[in-house]
Length: 296
Length: 277
Image (tube, rainbow over all chains, first blue to last red):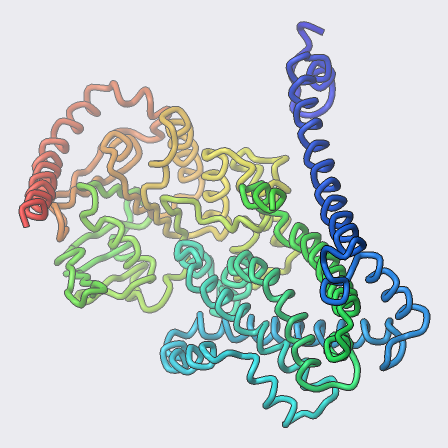
């Protein structure tokens, strides 16, 4: 064992590492730390939920205004079994997700295309720049009202609002990404014989991808906001409408219940996004960004 | 080797001015006259920031000359110079492409079928001693290995003109010596014309047929020295101790030193002025 050559992968070197008491201790420290974090997270959850339940149970907090965890569970179960005022709960969830996803797709595609176009053609960027900034400065939620007037109470007005919210986030990132492409890479590709389109496809777009993907996390949240707010402003189905109705009935548990569902949707979508991100950016060296994300 | 200078690089009265973001103009090079015959290895030395790299970007066709004419292989440069390869000071490898895909870019851009391009890239990785690293990403390689990839990527198009901008300056001394020998070996196989910008005079003399000394900025050609050391040069580490090398070194350094000192004095004065105001 002592004079086994140290090989880069597998073999004696690894066996040696396993028995190294220092490495074992270091691994144990990391494991223990992770366990502590997990225990702390579960503990926090229990304290908040149990505290909430107890406070409302003993009427220290008025359950009419504060709701209660058990009340939320009952409300969700009722929705799941008997459906909401607008049809089954699953239909409401599906409607909202459909609006958010369509809006997300439309916003991302148009944002990337416009970002790359304006990033590549400075003249266009200089001409359109002031107008884009003006529209961006508008509180975009008010556009929802226009879309309801134009497109009615159905799906298109929500998709439109979600798409507009997503568009600006993605557009500015794509634009910045294109602008900050390494000039050497572009020069190199040109000398190697690339046409303008080949430069965009092989150099500019992949290089801006890091920026674009960073914006997708925010954009995903915005697409859900767009769909929900759109439903608030006027709809016939969807979780936003369910919340609005619960609000009008002073059904606190109903509002919290719908919030919980939206939160679960957002978290799972975020998880899928992280997986996609890891696959798309597999070429990157393991950077500090991953660890900081794991921390938050 | 007798070659007509018509077929190489020819810069006649070339001046390049840039407009700075503040609106003023900056002259990078001024009235540069330079001829490098086909198949010759020309090293360009000069003080830092004097505009050596501008000579390269003009020859590559990445920029247009403000005045004067740049001709490569007898044709005036108009757009990207065809048949040229460029090796940059920093790596110009696409970090999101594997080593193999990076090297295959050149032939692909020139319309070769993907399969043939990959086969050709594989062969070139073998030539630069990186067989077995095809599927690595650039960030997984050392600086020296990345430089080999850059060389393969530039040479795969079989350029008749190779432009290099301080290609080895970011490498450590040992790796640099190895890469210098490697480059000479590759160059002697295909013999493209070379314009090699460096701030290292030893590197310049040990590799080149022709050493061009440029003045402090705005740069112009101060002197051109023929390097009559025999070829093949063999290991550049050994040639540095031959009497002829030392003689040439002393002669060219004498000329270069004045410019280096002038640049230093100018920048010191500028700093003092900034500190005073």
